[in-house]
Image 1: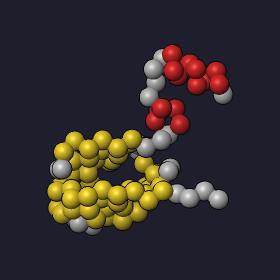
Image 2: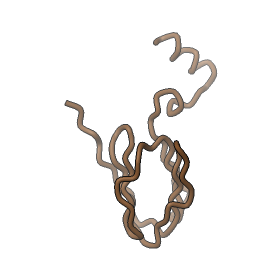
Image 3: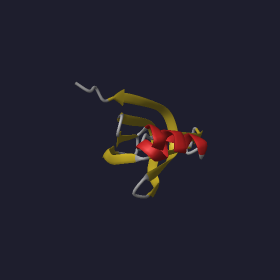
Length: 91
């Protein structure tokens, strides 16, 4: 495992590629991209709830829409008022 980590460090691989951690990119108050998501839990025009490996991402706003969905990435567009996170608690 250490060898793989060292190789990724040498190759400057982003850590979200190696261990499937989510990466959130907020481009403006109108667009965001979530990489490595697991599923869509709720979807309304004013609220989107996304499940990730580490927890849940809640996006609040209005005129929200899922602009682009792939197996790994999801783009959200609309007027984004707030984003909050709920961490998975491991027991």
